[in-house]
Length: 536
Image (tube, rainbow, N blue to C red; front, side, top):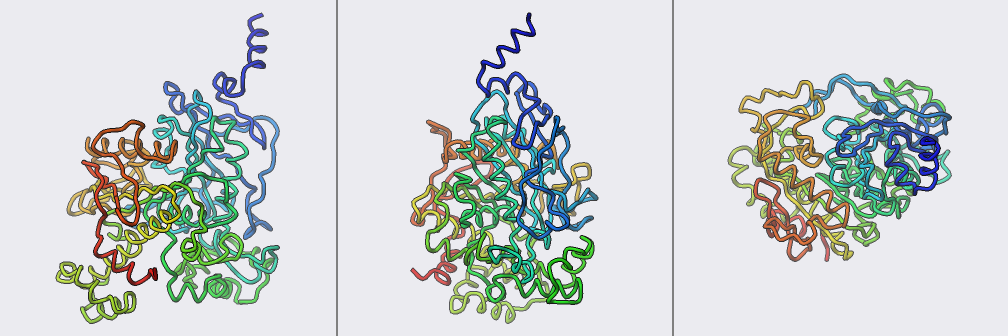
């Protein structure tokens, strides 16, 4: 009788309550999946390795993602899918990686959900890595801490490097849109379509989706805001440390569709620039990677103007105000260029002058005046800091200016806290043994990741209470924004209230041990780039 009563009760209850009774199993449009508890006391469940598209292998390599196949029975979702194909054994400062599973069959996502709360705001994460490396299931991206704040977290793997962004005339010829490249962006759009169709079954609200990403993931967020194919699939956006709104370089503009470098890769791969698509697909992934390295394919932008996903120059789309008019939170770090951008120790002052004139034209002299201390230490250091400010700090401010001009709410930040430096993606061997100690790298590129995800005690080393407190603050800011489009807590009166940004106020949240809003950062330096690039 008890079993019959319980069955009848399940039939009568709304779907969200049924899920709370049996959170292990969820029905998606492809079939049933079973996950695991990651924090049963807090009601947090995780589902790993859910396919959102068919494996892009064989005839599907270098094609838009296809809908995933259905399955019978219950699929166990307790293990993430493999990383997308990329270089292994990468040794590069904090971005070093060990050995890990790689495959072209990699279009999977992971979910963390508080099963006791239906219609949770959804946060969809796109990892960084120059669009050539990375994976969504690194420990640093564990979504449990964010989920404890009442949001549902999704992390997405997407095709990388030449598998995700190769553009070639033969690939465009077989496309009904005459489009080639940007498959990694199409993967993200496919994941967002999957979220729209399935996330309610996991307790998420498909009408309240925030996309967020860092580095190349942030560039992807920026590009998706400009793409007509992603219209309506998200409602807020967060960009961390890279935009897509800088004016194109001469080299990128000359090969905006990527065909020239695609032909060079094909020449290195099969010794034929005019090879057909079938011949390209017969090659091994190892051979594709060797050809990409030999042809220096990745030396230019991976995102291309393909006429479909990206219909025209992204900067032009933003200048015309045609991007998604959604609330935007974005920012950069104080020392992004440290070991990320090259340092030319042999550069002299005349070389620096010539290089700066090429970038800034008649404004070069005024710009160099602001880097006098760096020049005195090393012209190469000054060049690196100029490049850092142009690409990161100014790039994010320019993105903020474009979005603010549409009337959408914008919140800009600058992270100048000094964290420990460690191997972000090798949690079992994090120590870099820096000669001047673990906090000698400043606020380096990617230093904010553990703070945003609240994983400061799951990765790295040498964490202090100030780090934990800043992480709690950032987790609150990010999840508040995902809930309402405003990072501040309702009724908040505390000192670190985050004021919205506009081009007049330049309001910027400084993220450190004493978070507070200031009137812009590096304003005099960045204003020169406005004079160089803006025509209004």
